[in-house]
Image (cartoon, rainbow, N blue to C red):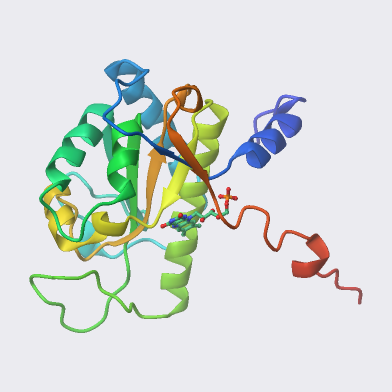
Length: 231
Ligand SMILES: Cc1cc2nc3c(=O)[nH]c(=O)nc-3n(C[C@H](O)[C@H](O)[C@H](O)COP(=O)(O)O)c2cc1C
């Protein structure tokens, strides 16, 4: 039986969904986080809990059970608190290709969550990879692995929005390349789906440059992308 949902939840969830928007916060120098390390930890864990509530269809392959990461979920999450975001930014000075705006966002972020998805692969695989396994096999299972990982990501972004944190889904830029991946210790056979930046609640009051998503309003007219089927 489904637990009873509070009567005002409908309004609240609609508000959170419509409030979520790409908000790239570009700090000019490393910021002091707003939250304590304990509060950052609890924020990150609450977002991960939301991610793990997303629907998923197929288990990931056995090959991705490594160390403590033994879940059959078709994605993985790697989390950095504010201090580790700043440390990563320091280490990225030496890394190619240049980090660009990722650096400014690592200076501002309260947390970053890297979400990768775990492709089904076929045939012999290289022992050492320079690149992610791209292009991947375009079958239904892989499509649904990505769909599941995307649903998990959206849950994270909505959770961050509900908690008052501006957020940004980045493809990752330099972070998905070998040099940064080695720093982060994220295996190259996983495919990055998003580097999720979670900024402090007071980010917009701190006077940093803030950029919104370019496509925020494009293509939104319902009749331009949906059609009612009458039989
Ligand atoms: C899979 C995915 C990857 C994205 N990667 C980037 C990115 O690398 N750089 C960027 O500026 N925006 C990126 N975005 C954010 C989009 O630009 C943004 O969602 C879009 O402009 C709509 O704005 P909104 O999120 O405010 O609705 C990405 C979004 C998705 C779904």
